[in-house]
Image 1: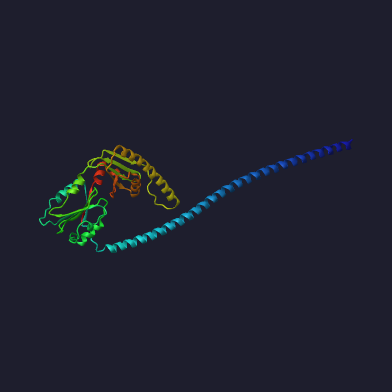
Image 2: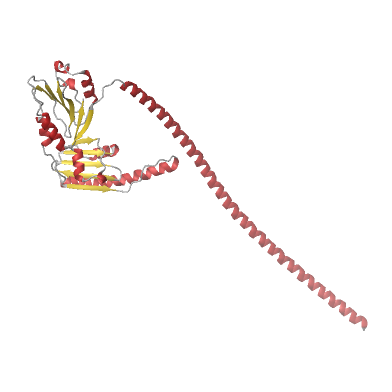
Length: 347
């Protein structure tokens, strides 16, 4: 009896031992699965981090390549500028050497419409019984030697002839000269000299110049700048009947080099193109409302002036003025006064 109880206890103990072993195996598998999950999660984290690192590396490599390209371009630009500077320095030195001993103008002066009338009135007060007061009208591109006789041409000093040859204004000029050299000066008028002529008599021949300056003509005045342009129509030389100011946002010029400069310049060019679209839209209206136009006077940016010249009707006479007018700082009447001013050169 005792042996049977002992055997039962042994069997029960073995049963408990086997069940514990099974439980132990199951717990180990779970732990293994947990460990696998943890490792897979870690692998995913590392792969994500690796992709991020690769992306950063690719960006840095791209920036590095761009930096090398920018540096090479900057070095190329620098070399070009150094060559250009050396060339300009050489040209400047050459001009200095060539200009040594050359005659210079005794002075220059800008004469407003009112001032030129007063000037011509004073000039008319000169009289000479010896008939030695010379007046020469020279249209654009006409040389003095092609207008006056050789005998009269030889009476002028070589210095005076040299100074006149250096002047070639688009509106031509009128030359007033006393053979005794009390008076020796040239007037570049606001209105083009149309015909060549010369007079040698007891007074200066100012009538043709006065007549052209006093003639009313229907003019269109265009002042062209990137971002700010002016259109004015005047039926005479006294005031504008119509004034239009066209303003746009245009980026200032960029001084840096490389990719950023090229992109900035493209954006600036787009701004200027948009501004010119607005300008031409307004110009078409002004031309339509004020036709006919006798003359167009233009001032400002040279490139914009060329663009406008290509778009204007071919039958319009165009006068380009070198005067740099800042429209925002001046009123419309000041613009008109400036473009109708004449230039005086003392020889």
